Structure formats: structure tokens, C-alpha cells
Length: 453
Image (cartoon, rainbow, N blue to C red; front, top):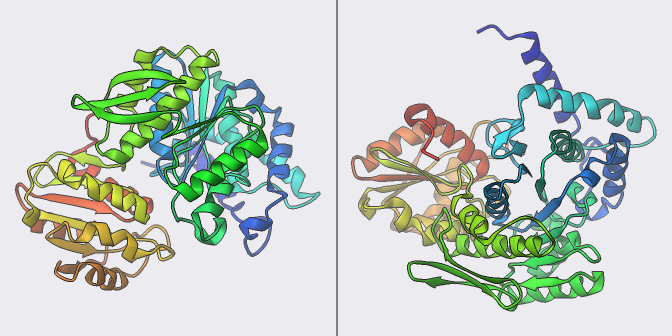
């Protein structure tokens, strides 16, 4: 099919946005020095008419789990009859996925219209100083999109950190930190305490905050920041908890009530922890007047999930695609691998990995590699950050010496090799990076179609 003038408009809009990546300097500004970033995005929003002030908002930060938690909260709001927007990052296939309402990405024409709205403002700001960056602009576009569509609620995910993230220009009804682990240490700090301080930077005076942080050191920082800011804090383990009960989970809190028969859409203790944070956030919102009956909260947690997060594709062999990209998310995947792989015996399970060069590949592979009969190391193709497959093979042999390792030049070659090795009754699991998950998922969907909702 020949491209239309409208296709050209979308391509040009995205190309202009991509030109704003690290726009403020030839070299990226170190995260710790970005003190003016929030001033920029606030100015951008002011010139756009402050769309965030027309929205009821939830703000979610965390090293891992924020995407699943946001999906659960949004699904619960939808179950209660509320039109709900979600601003997330990164996207898997198309930029429009970052601006979703009731699970549907914005349309291409809406994307172009949103770029048309922010572009003249950004270019006017450029004449005075370094103008807004890519993430400043996509954040403003998301809020403008939700305001234009008149959503009843919007869930906003932090991009990186929290304190200096573009999304921190909003004032939500509730803020939450899902978890703390060591990731993005070059930008956020080398300790859990330092990372916790950055993520708790989304707390605001008088705005209730929910913490799912289990680490003692990080939890102490979360409590300190909440006290200094002056916001009510609800902590997992102190104010709420979730525990196995009768084949499901039970959310319980002396401050937020009890919900029985909680069944998260995905298996494992990590997803139950995300559900606990989501249910605590939803309970606080209900106390603040949001129309969120308990049954809608339970149902929402039961259907809130994301593509490429422990996503199963039926067939021979079974295929699982997961975006695990750090040690904590790899460990969470490893803990439920038997459930995800179903009846596939260990000798017919194959792990396919591609990992970014800036990640600790050994830490990602360590909990996973020994649980498979073979590891296939490859690289994603659409981003230059991929680590060489040979480097991943060396890391795999280091953490799982007895597990055979194969190399593949492309994700498609890796997929074919893994399927042939797993065979009937086998299972193939893709992991290591969300960038890789996007490419792998595309291959699987092209062959098997989208999985059932």
C-alpha cells in the first residue's frame, strides 16, 4: 500500500519528537544536575493551559512493578465505570501506546494533533533557553490527550527516578512507590537508600502516599521523606498486607479494609505484591471520594496486565514473552517459571535472551539460566544498546556452567532454533529486555496471533 500524506504527517511528527532527545545539550545532562527540568515542563504545561489541573490523577514510581500496578489500578477504575487514561513508557510497538484510554492507544491522527499542539510552544521556548525534551513533551501530550478526551481518571507512570522526572509536575490524588532495587544506578545512585530518595521525590504535602517497598534501608528513607514532606503514608507490612488464603489472596488493612478472593491476572508473589499496592491505592482513592466499590477493585486486579509481561502464547511449543531486564524482575520470572511453562518438562524448556549492554547480564541470567535445558543468546536489532551474544554466552556459562548455550545472530534465528530444540510439549521463554520483548513478541504474534484477552 502506498503511503498517504497522513502517514507522512505521523512520520514527521515522530521524527520531530525524536529530535528532542537530549536536546538541551550535545551531551546528556547528568541526572543530578537536571534541577531546571521541572521548571521547563511546568512552563510547557502552563502554555498548554495546564491540562493536568483538569484531571484526577494517580502517580506511580518504582524500580519494578509500576507498569503492572498501573494496569491494575486502571482496570479497577474501568470496572467501576470510569473512563481511564494511562501514560506509560516505554512502548512496545508504537508511540501511541504511551497515551492509552481504557486500554486503547491514541489514534495516529490524535498523535499528530498533539504534536501540532506542543511543537510551536517548544520552539518558542527554544528561543529563550534550552526548550523541552522528548519526555517533557510526551508527558505534556499525555495530559493534554486525557484532558481533551475528558477522562474520569488518569494513571501516570514515572519514566526514570521520580524527583526530577517530567511527570513530577503533576499533583495527584495519590502517589505510590511499588518497590526499590538496584537499577539505573548511574543516574539514581548506587544504593537502595539513594534510589528510594529519588523515587520518594514524587511525594507532595498533604497528598497520601502508598509504599510497597520491602527493603528495610529503602523503607526507612521512604518514611523519612514522607515525614519531611508532610504526606500521610500507607506502608505494606505496617498498614496493609496481602497473604495467601483459600487458593487466592487476601488483602487486609486496619486502615483500608479487607478484600478476599484476590486473584491477580499473573502468577507469583511479585504480582501479589503489586496487587497489594494497587488495592491500597484504590482504597485510599475510595476514601477520597472516587466511586470505586470493593468488587470493582477486586475485578480490576484480576484483569490488569500488560503485553510482554509473563505473556503466554499457546501452541507447540508454548511461548512466554517477558520484559525482565534486571536482577529483581528476572528473579520474579524465575519464581513462577514452572507455572508459566505448564506441563513442559525441564529438558524441553529453552531460554532466549537479549540484554542491553548497560545491564548486569550475569545478574539477569543467574536466576534463570539453570532452570532451562538450553540458553540461546541473541541481540535485539532496533536499538544499538544490545550486548553482543558472545558476551551473554560467557555470562550464562559463568552462572550456570552445566547449561548448554547456543548463539543466534537475530531474534528470528533464535526463535526458530529455540522452537526446534523445545519441540512438542516444550516451552520457549524470551527475556532480558523490554526492547527484546517487543521484537520477540512481534515474531510470535505474526505466527500465532494475539493471545486471548
